[in-house]
Length: 76
Image (cartoon, rainbow, N blue to C red; front, side, top):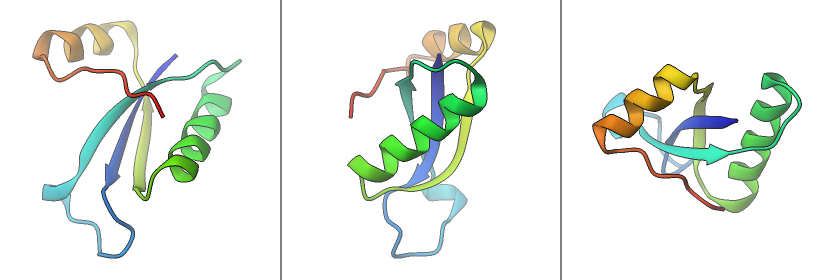
């Protein structure tokens, strides 16, 4: 499963929509909820990021992300 994680680079400042960034993680999970939990835990342990939202990408959404050229899996 591939998840798109929306985040702010620091927890020190108030979040601003203009500064929201995204990364993509491939997570091995039995279901969507377990995947979201594993994703949040991994990002919080390995980065100083403030996670805003985690989204499971459908096949169509993943294909769109790949077409736009911004898709790149992140390894933490």
